[in-house]
Length: 547
Picture (cartoon, rainbow, N blue to C red):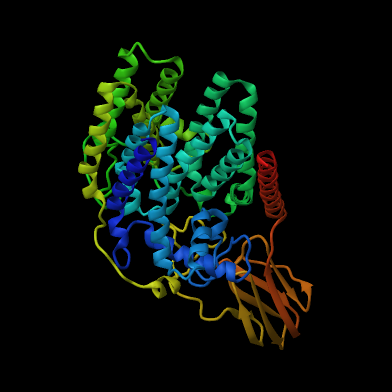
């Protein structure tokens, strides 16, 4: 009977997920705010890895061939995953569609496992999973914003807490320790803002577990989180320290005050494909079924006298989390947004809708505690499908083909925020010549270039200044006849220049890692090796015990 119930739940989840993803089976793609940029970034990640740039940091082809440090700041994991899928013979557009669709599948399974384990009910897992998939903001990410990083974050939220829950039970400790470390590290690499917003939820659960289970359990949980931080260090530490070099350090992407919400926007259903400052903007709606589930959960806590201490305190903690996050959506909390570290770096308060939606859907599993509320939970899950399935559609379909994205020159940013500060005139056309003699007389031949290196020969009749039309970024080095050259980049385009006396030279340029990047890379690699070794030891030990 137990297996039959699980099979029925799996089949139900599969059907509701498939219905929500039907447009992803359509030929071609569809326009979203960021979705096509994801394809362009994937094509660029593919090029960078082919060039041997590991880890990829500097795009050589984008920004009209002048390059810029895209993956030093833009979350890279979706594109690492994308290159892996593409290597199996899948096209770039199809790869991005697979990642979006796969994130929904994993989010449904993750939420089912988490809610089922926490509330000790298969029905709880089913209700939470359906509500999570049919969360309005989830559909916004899939069909309006096209945020691939946020979509992956939706999948990782429940997985991280599920691993944390398993760690507290001390069952297969090593496996769940590594799983939580990797999941948290991947969250940081998938969407750094979502990682910032979700970390307080993790801390909230960690503090709760400390009170409930004591110090011994908390050590393994904290160690797993630290391992996740170290695993992703190669990305977030250089990005944090080198932000001072880019436009984002002096000019925010957007005016935060324009993106706070109103109470009506949270409560009343709406749907649109525009940005929040346009007419027909995308919805901020929390979801009527989700709101009802929250209210019923509050009533359950207040009215039920049979709740055990653990269940009651867990539900109250989730409710508190929802309320605190919802408050941050409103403009009166603007001083907090300006003052709190990391929160001040986030331009769009409505990104809070993702962790709020997660907490509300997780809490919905609590409805299975009482018989009368159980039926309400089932009804709300069905209502969510009926209400929000019409949202599972794009504004229109397009079919531009992979080559369109492979040859795209865009910067894939909304306001060139990742451009180095020394670039005062942003490129508008593709570079004509990779190498120019801007002062003096000479001839350049045999130019070969990629994203992370270039070479050429130059014969100079007089003392000259040579320009390489690649934007300078710390780490670039240029050698003339194997002698290190001083690079200047004070020209309006911020490209690399160096002075040479008359003569014949073989020039070689190479993008190297700075000391901070090298240290970060080393720590991340060592952490990965350590986690792999730990997993291997655990599996071998477990096998010996069984033997």
